[in-house]
Structures are given as structure tokens and as C-alpha cells.
Amino acid sequence: MSPKIQPRVPRGMRDILPQRMLQRQYVIGEIEKIFQRFGFEPLQTPVLELRETLMGKYGEEAEKLIYDARHREGKEDLSLRYDLTVPLTRVVAMYPELVKPFKRYQIAPVWRAERPQKGRYREFYQCDADIVGSKSMLADAEIVTMVVAVLRQLGFQSFVTKINNRKILTGIGQYAGVPAERRGGLYRAIDKLEKIGAEGVRAEMAQNQIPTPAIDKVMTLIARPANAFGELRELLGDVPIAMEGLEELKQLAAYLDDAGVPRANYTFDVSLVRGLAYYTGPIYETIVTEPKIGSLTGGGRYDELMGLFGNQALPMTGTSFGIERIIDVMDELAMYPASIGKSVTQVLVTVFNRDLIGASIRLANQLRAAGINADLALDTEGLGKQLKYAAAKSIPFALIIGPDENAAQQATLRNLASGEQVQVAQDQVADALERNLRA
RNA sequence: GUGGCUGUAGCUCAAUGGUAGAGCACUUGACUGUGGAUCAAGUGGUUGCGGGUUCGAGCCCCGUCAGUCACCCCA
Image (cartoon, rainbow, N blue to C red; front, side):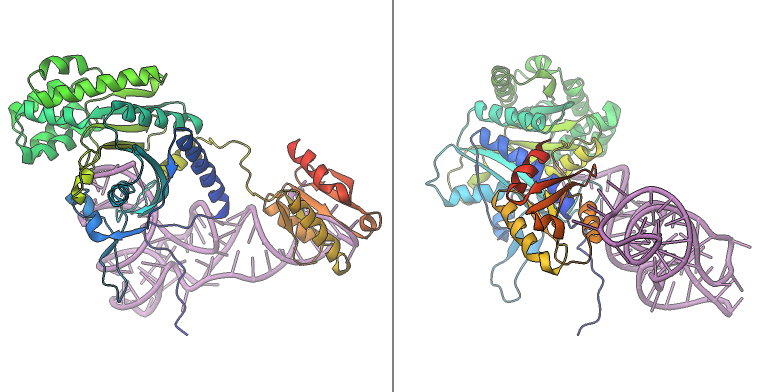
């Protein structure tokens, strides 16, 4: 035998115990429902991808966070997937026969070797929905409409989806005359506008070696991020890529309006950047204003990504929900409906003594056949212990079949919360329980 | 990846360098066909791990692991 080792999980990863799983399943279920309502269908892919599939897609910084995995005798270089988007492009490249536009959703764990923090883990779930094969801004509008629908379905009130366009950001860089190799620093600085303010952004740009005249030009463009689009149109009139981006957002806005998306739930914001390298068009990100925990969703259009597989690139757009953060926020705001109990079990069928085990087994399975979630006590250590077990697990009802009840073909149904008990005929316990569960 | 803070019973936390404690939880009993309330008793710790200083370390020093916060980045 090897020496005893401490039970623990890898850094930044965690177990999710049953009570918490019920909350997760609720959140995932609600998201999935809305995905399907918008015509998306499920997809599953391996947690491991060939390393070459992932490399060169996310940018240099992000790629350092990719986990490598390899079997001792394996001949393939493998990596744990970093997101669900690149695997999607791989799937679309592999199966050209998929009907376009291809709309899929995928809810699955991804891995990033970041330094763990609250709401940030090394293994976490993403809920992605993407549309492949449509250049139309209607595809982007559908995504944003769905993002808002999902968050409202989960009960969020005060949130806003920020929308921008990479083409506008590219245009700003061109307009200000920032050299291409400094653009990354430029955009990262712009992204911090809300966090560190205009002066902070100036300082950040200076530190990123953006020439002072360029800083001045950029700052006039992003001074009022949410309302600046009219001014942008005037100032960027000679920058074709920027005008293209503005035109796209105008179209997107019209579609969102037609979809009836509440104005309070989205805004156009030139200071939105987003990290991933592959975005090419509209980008979106949702933040909840209270409490502040960063973004809950993020996405955008990435029309060139698939081209990296040597195929003709199909235009793609989509979004990702950060379910870990959504759950953290929902915890903090106590947003779960009362219908999510602490247990899925609806009744504990107790076992009175050895002679009555058979009666309890029969009743438990009779309840299960009637569609009721019934747990069965596994030993006869005494009713007290069994009721204590039921209470500890928050099981709402207990069924007691003692000698007296059984002789009369009856059973005692006890409500653990109220302590009320009723006698029920044994062939009617399912009906009685259903009535009580509804009450 | 950089810097700060933290790590003591299942949980929340105490303990001027001098024999590790409380509340809650748990077990048992008062209550032999019934959980929660009250009362009583009891179990529970190589103080995250490994070194060092010291007559003596939970406390001081170094390392390491984990959590957390701010950066970097990001869901």
C-alpha cells in the first residue's frame, strides 16, 4: 500500500456537491430552454483537442493558459479545450454537409490555467450558442436578443449588454495613426475606461508607448462611449473600415428594436474591446451593475477563424455565458425560485422493523411507479434516526408503516416541516402524496 | 505571471514564545412507534505541509501547498 495521501482537488478546481448541483442544473436548464426556443441544437465535442487545433487561435497571452494533456504512450499532442468556439469551427470544417446556417449550443467545461480568484476557476462551464454561415446582422441581433432573453428568464433585472464593433476599433487605430504593433496596447487601455477613467486611460496609453497626438485623437473619440456614435460618424468619415462597422451597428440596432429588446438592456459602447484575438465584427458583453462581478456573457462575430483550418471561412457569430459567475451573482442576490428544493427526493419510506421491510419496499416502489421520487430507509435502526435522516436531507415527507397501519392496510404520511400526519390507505399513498406536494 | 493578506475541531473563530479553547454541528441519554425545542454528558486537533531559531513554537524565520485580494488577463 502506498502511504496515505490528503484528499484534495487540483488548484482552481472544485467538487460540486448535490445541493449545489441542483442550483446549477436549474440555471443550465433555463439557459438551454431559451437556446432551444431560438432554434439552436445541442452539440458535444471531446474535452481534448489536438494541440494544433487550438494553437494560433487565441493570441499569445491566452495560449500560455492552455493545459496540455498526453497519454504516456500517446503519439498525439493533446490539449484540454480552452473554449467551445474553436472546437465548433473544427466541427464545421470537418462536416461540410451540416445544413447552414448551422445553429448549435454547447454547455460544457473548459480549462484555463489562470490564477484562481473568486468567480474565476481553472475548470469552469461555458454555455455557448453560435450561428455559422450567416453574414447578416440579423444573426448578431438574434444572439443579442437571446442573451437578453436568457438573463431575464433567470430573473436578472439590472443588466446591460454592451455592443461595439472590432471594425470601429480598427478604424480608431487607423484614424489616430497608431502603428499596428501598438494597437493591442491601445485597445487594452481603451477597455479600462470605465474602470480607471479617462485620465487613467491616457496614462495607460502613454505607458503602452502610444504617441501623444494619437492619444489625444483617440480620447476625443471615446470620451462619451455610450453616445458617441453620431460624432464618430463625422470624425471617422474618411476611415472606410470604421464606417463599415458603424453601418453594421446601425442595422443591428434596427433589428433589436424590431425584436422588442428593451432599451435599458443594451447599449452601444466604443470602449468595449474583449480579449480574444479572433473577433472581426460586432462584439458584445453583458455586465450586471449590482453586484459588480465582471461580465456574465461575452461574444462576437469571428468571420475569419475557420479559415485557419484551410477551408473557405464561413462567417460565424455567437456568445458565451459564464455560468460560474451567473451562479455566484444569483447566490448573492438569492435569485433561485422556491421550487428548487434542497433535495430532489419527495418522500422517505421508513422501515419499521424486519417484519415490515417487505411492506415498505412494496410501497416505495409503488410510489416510484407513480412518478414520485421516493427514498427507502436501508436499515431498521429506529424511526427516530430515519426521520432525522429525512430532516437532515430536507426531504419534505416521511411515510411510516408500523404494525398497526399495516394490519389495517394503511400508512402514516408525515409532513416533516409541519409535523402533521394523516392516515392513508396503502393503495392511495401516491394520490395523497401528490395532493400534499402540491399544497 | 507579479505583489499583499490568510491558513487552529466538520463550520465560524479564540489562545503576551510556556500543558490548544469556545459557540454551533455531531454522538449518547432525559423521551422504548416520530426529526426539530430544552437540559446533561461525550467524541473530535501531529495548529495546511516541510525545515530552521529557541530550554520551549499555533505564535518568530525560510521554503512549499492552498485560499483570497489587487494587478496581468478573462467567463
